[in-house]
Image (spheres, rainbow, N blue to C red):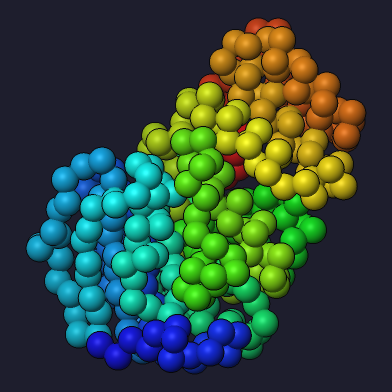
Amino acid sequence: MNYQTEKQRPQGQGLGLQASVSAVITTCGRPELLRKAVRSILQQDYAGPIEVVVVFDKIAVDPLEDIEVPAGRRLLTIANARTPGLAGGRNTGILAAAGEVIGFCDDDDDWHPQKLARQMQTWQDAPQAVAIASGIDIRTDGSNILRTPPQQVSFEQFLRSRVTAIHPSTMLYRRGDLLGRVGLVDEQLPAGYGEDYDLLIRATRFGDVHSTQQALVGVLWDRPSFFAGRWENIAAGLSYLLAKFPEFKGCPKGTARIAGQVAFAHAALGNRPQARTWARRALRHDFKQLRAYAALAVSTGAVDAAWLVKQMQKAGRGI
């Protein structure tokens, strides 16, 4: 396979339509869904070389010998050699990868056949983009919900909103950026929660994220998430992000949004004083922040947190 390294291609030079791509999947189980994800990447109708790096986190490495690897494709299975968890697993994959471009895919998602070809065309049309996303096809409660992100999202916009239509399984980054100016995935994040949002904020300090305006990734919500119900991790991760980026101090709506999410997590845990403290903080910055009101309702016992989350997921959204 003809992989051109970052040393061969000067940083900042545009990527070709057939640039080499390494897709990193971190897994700690779900073998059937993992195989579906891997096959969806190997079977891309992309003319350039593709490598799939599967990182096994806290479980034995499965060589995936039952998966057929087509010509021009490569499958690498390795153990997480860094911090246990998603962040360490992704960094292990990035460091082991050979491609010019790094893509991420969760082990329960899958790429549509045209994903790479269409996203690389988007990058060709917008070479200044720091990363490329696409729309998603959410499978939840027996239905499909298509979500398309804005064509272009800046650093300031990501501070105001997570822009959840930009899903980590859609993302393409230059490997040189992840090894250089943007940096690797933050392994200090509590339980790795919010690592994709952290990476988007850091990346967009150097340019905007552009998105292909099509749903090119299937996202499965009809299964338990590894973060579902783990409200301690969610509260800790979001609090960490709010403290990490001083720019949030100049973005009231962004601060209110995250504070509202932290309030909801504490309310779900039954930590009423913390929930109300964070809810008040959210409302001081934005009195329209609905997550804060939801947290207050849950903290009084008037609404069940799990029920509310399920209703949001049916609509293809989270708290």
